[in-house]
Image 1 (cartoon, rainbow over the protein chains, first blue to last red):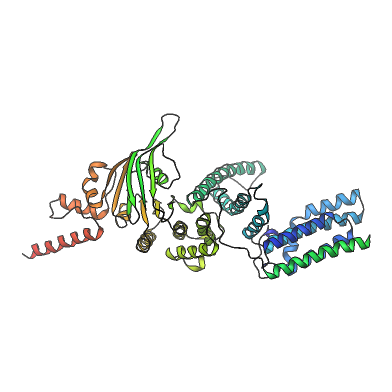
Image 2 (tube, helix red, strand yellow; image 1 turned 90 degrees about the horizontal axis):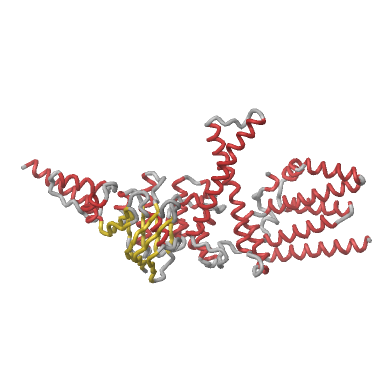
Length: 245
Length: 275
C-alpha cells in the first residue's frame, strides 16, 4: 500500500492548497475518462508523470503502482486485445494507469486530514443539503481507525497464537485461525468505536454544531497561479481537440 | 461558578430488577474547591460524574449550574482509549474546536495545555498512540485542560500510572489550581492521592451520599460508614497510634498537619526517653 500512502517531502505540490489538488484530480480524471484517442491518453500520461515528478515523488512509487495493480492492468489489456485491437488495448491500459497515477499523486502530496479539510471546504456550499462537517468527521475517523485496527489485529493474533491457534499450516486450519481472529477483532472494533464516541462527547462534540478548526487553509498567490495554469491547460486541450477534429 | 445537585437519582433499567445507581444525592460545589469522591466499586461514582458533566440526564432530581467561567469537562476512565487524532496537537485541539473558537485561540490553548502537563515539545507532532502510557495520560489531561474548564471532573485518573506518573499528575493539578479558578472533583480508589490533592470528601456507598465532610472528620467516622474504604496512609497510621494510646490528634485536615502531628509525637517520645 506504499503507492497510496502520504509521502512526506518538500515540493511545489506539497505546499499547494488541497482544494487546488482536488481540482487537478477532478480535471485529470475527467480527461482520462473521456479521452478516446491513444495520442490523447499518451499526452495525459506525460502530463501525469510531470505532476508526479514536480510533486517530488520517487520513481519507485510509480513502479509500486505497476506492481500492486499488475493483474488488473494485465486483465484489462488482454480483455481489450481480445475484443478490440492492440491500439484499443493500449489505450485502456494507459487510461487505467493515468487514473492510478492521479490518485497515487494526490495521496502522496496531501496529508489525509488536510485532504479531508479541503474536501469539507469545497463541499461547504452544499452544507444546506449535505451534512458536510459530519461527512468530513466520519472520513477522518475512518482513516484514523485503520492503524488502530491493525495494531489490535496484531495483538489478537499474538494472543491467539499463544493459545495455540495456527495461522500458518494448511488451508482449513488457516481459515479456522482467521475466524479466531476476526471475531475478537470485530468486538474490539465495536468497543473502540463506543469509547471514541464517548471521548468525543465528553469534549463537547455535538454533531451539526458549528466547529472551529486548528488549521486554517490559506489559499495563496501560488495557488491562484496554479489554478490559472490548470485553466489554460484545459482550454488548450479543448482547443487542440477542436483543431484536430 | 457553582454546581448544585438536588435529590439526584439515576436508575438503570435492567430486565431482572432496575438498578439504582444514585439515590437522592445532593450537594453544592464551587470553583476553587478540590473535592475527593470516595466509594467502593459500583457505588455510583462514574454515574455521578457523568450527571455532573451533563452527559447523563438524571432519572429524577435537579442539577443547576450558576456562573459561566468555563465548561464542565469530564476526563473519563482510561481516556487514552478514546484517542483518534493523527497528532498530539490535533488530539488536544479537538475540544477547543468544538467550542467554535478561532484558529489562533485554539493554537494558543493547545500550546498552553501541553506546556501545563509538561509534554516535550518534540512529541507534539507525533501520533498520540505512539506515546508511552504516562505521556498518553498527560495528553488526555491536556485535552481536557485546553477547554479551560470551570470544573474538571476526573474519573480514576491514577489507574495505570506508576509512582512518578502519579506524582507528576498531582503536581500538575496543584499548579493548575493555583493558576486558574478551577473546581476539581476526583474519583479514585487511591486515598493517598486524594488526601494530598483535595480538602473535601464526598463518600458514596451503594448510590447514597454517606458523607460530605473534611478529611479530619472523615478519618474519625470512616470505619463506621464502610469497612471497605481505606483511609489515607497517614490518617490510618495516626488513628492506629491514637487507638494504641499515643497522645496524638488523629484527625488532622491536611497532610502537612498529619506530618506535624507525627513529628511532635517523635519529639515528645525523645524527651520522654531522656527524662
